[in-house]
Length: 333
Length: 211
Image (cartoon, rainbow over all chains, first blue to last red; front, side):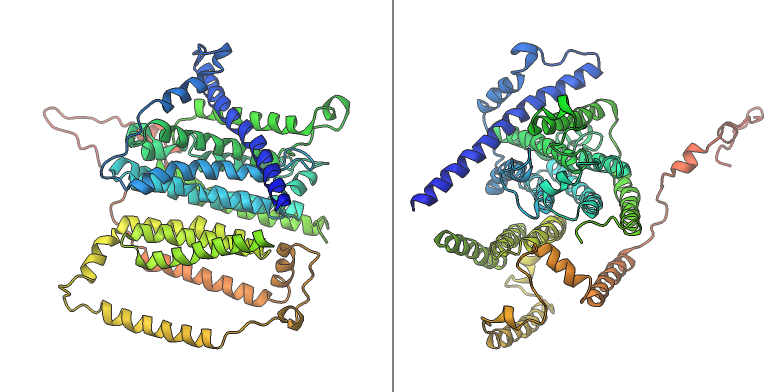
């Protein structure tokens, strides 16, 4: 019994050591997003609370905590309360398999990439549940849109992952990073990286694909009826998902914790910092896209996903596998 | 080992209770949510016996895609109202209930046959003709047999699914007249000559633009 408790405590300690930095960086990333957005538009953005406005998110969180939580009378109460919890939980549990360095990962499971993919495909439930339980037209329309959009773009993300897996020969995320020691996959699979980036934008409901919460048409989409801390949980879950997608992009294409060149000043920096740099780089790209690209129309979005991305990435699977087969480079024989 | 069996009983209890709730709960959307819970706990059971690949595929395919479509259909069609009509006391002599009873009877007898003929086989691993190695991950071992020994069956099942998909599209597709579609090529390749006309308008008479 004693050993059970010691295992339990060490695991809880490790989980807290992972989750607390993730939550803090989600708060910081909201600030960064608003800041980048403001700079593109020649504004200053949040710059009052703390140095450079760094504590703006904490002030916002405090505000959300003290606001009243309103549950609509005609809503389905249990599902309504469960929806933000589901979103938040799913956004956080996927961080368990992200490798921050060699042997520096909470759960080094064999099917890590499948786990990431599965959890991110579950993310749609938080949105559907919220939209349906609100029992109101705008949230419902937003939820339906979001579900269709996320299911569509998951397909192309899945095919892109197959491309990477063909080059690695393993579903383990650490193996995927170690396979990029000589060459990051962003170079041979550059078109796939671009498609992955755009699909990640759609998967996380970021602009220019933020149709589920298009404020001009749907007020705030599935979040319309939410208030106070429940709204903040949706918000946090969304940004945690965005960070996760950036981390996934960094691990799949940008060599995870590896340094760009294996010479002295670069490889002296520990691996986790490289991963964080890469996540930040991808996130700033996300923020720049938000600031510069206008919103897509819904039929254009579906057309892009099904008629352009899916055929192209399927074609690239054939191309990659024939290339690997012809030059006898297939891994894991 | 104790912790393992505790988790096994927790997950199987959730699976059984939610499977019962799928049929019992009055709200159809709740039924689908219980179905999803059932899928999730079954995939947890798969992971517990070491079939991690199957568990994850179960999550991705059933929970991530199939159940979303279920939810979609149930939410859009508003099945709850129809259900009330079918099972209300003023039954209008429709054919739903006799057919439903027939189908459920057939399934019931099938289940009895299956359960009657089912028994544990403790030496299953030794009696198999396929060589299962405990060294490689189960993703790799599934891939090894799926694409070599069973390639024909695998391809045939893929073809069947493809035919079913195309069939569903053909059956439900109907071309609607008068739908305006956007063509990028047409928009981009539009020249100034096509867009602007110089029209000689006669005095006190209108000009027809559409022609």
